[in-house]
Length: 289
Ligand SMILES: Nc1ncnc2c1ncn2[C@@H]1O[C@H](COP(=O)(O)OP(=O)(O)OP(=O)(O)O)[C@@H](O)[C@H]1O
Ligand SMILES: [Mg+2]
Image 1 (cartoon, protein in one colour):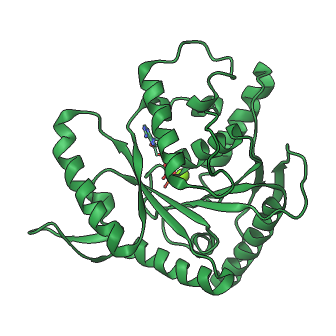
Image 2: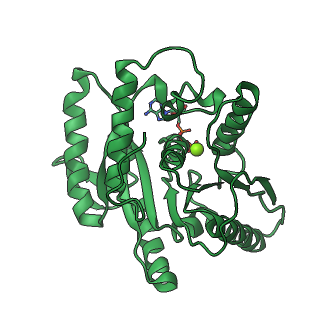
């Protein structure tokens, strides 16, 4: 395990608010949402830590590495998060490897928690011991969900004939288990917020969007999550990855080009998400992005 960056001054004894971005489904937008939340928190002037548990893809780490390179090469005045990089245990035996991964995770979280106000954890897709441990450490769990019934299926089983929700599904059960663990270990709840990602702005999709929305509303009451306004499918949410930027950085990054209408709409979506999260320590504060 190595400490990759430590760009912020130390502030001993803090206990950060932990935001886990998780969904077992691959490609739901976890790393994208994690990076945008990190930048939003930094824009709010908060010390922000990043932990990427997807030690193979390293999407969040690569995003932040790209940011570091952009800052050096352009002399841009942009904030960077503290990053702690985990390495996967090489132990052959499964239980021993899980225990080593968990121990490394706990050290990383403690270190970041001591020096940051918020720690954002990008949890990998699939079901793993590390993902479960991370979920059970969340104060806020943010679950991006692709806007289709295929992805919805991980949260709740739907009866085809009457579009009724039959029962909570595998990911919901994992969150349920994490909530129990957290309640025992820390006696505090996990605030679970689900957001629809990559929603279509086309009218043709409106009916499907409405059906997914209705089903999510029913499910949110049944299994206890809050629904956040989602993010639309927008090029601006993906095109700045190579520079390590987000649209929230554009005013200070020295990027050519003007703010388009779609950028303003995207920024409003991020603001609405941020407001819905109701993160402690930010109550009543005007948004700075
Ligand atoms: N709202 C959006 N608009 C446009 N593209 C998006 C949006 N959200 C995510 N993407 C793109 O979708 C792809 C998957 O997103 P991302 O990598 O964030 O998902 P993930 O859940 O982290 O995936 P994995 O499970 O593989 O870690 C990426 O190419 C990303 O740029
Ligand atoms: Mg990812």
